Length: 217
Image: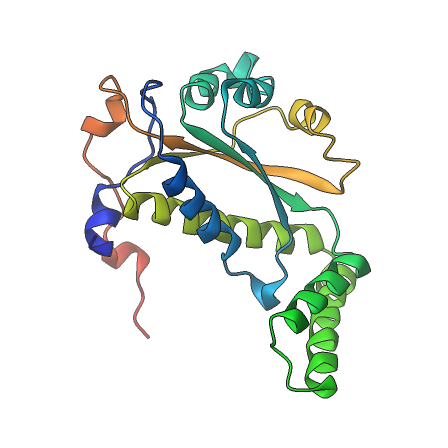
């Protein structure tokens, strides 16, 4: 499928057809795309909770009440929903896991290359943690890169999707024990197929003009 065409036609789905499910093989393909998402220095500061059945989606919907209630049908009627979480801190244990995976994947020609990679990551983490003082913001930026990749991937696969930032963070954190896991909830992403009653499907796409957002230098 043509990338520009997908960019012109995909949109944020506001209502799903609950009777339509994404074939499992196709959804597993999306999960592999998510696993392969890029991040700064390949830091991968994330964890994803995947809801594939009604009971799992109900757990997420506990955080979609009161002022967030309008988002509950998007989750409950979706085929699948993913909760994107970000690590509160980049720990030494996480850095060790990354380095071990790099070595297992055959990315190092020798000990010097391995040590250089280790020192590079430590340098970045220390910079954002100690000098800029915003390691959490930097880490969450990487999670949103993964979100963008998944939105595009879904469009290429002919699957509708909706990023959802409106939810009760405290409720969802308690439901999944995120604090104990060293995680914060960043965003929800629902997948499925649009309902015939989805008003947004019938509206024209609206974006700022090129001259308002591009400066060629």
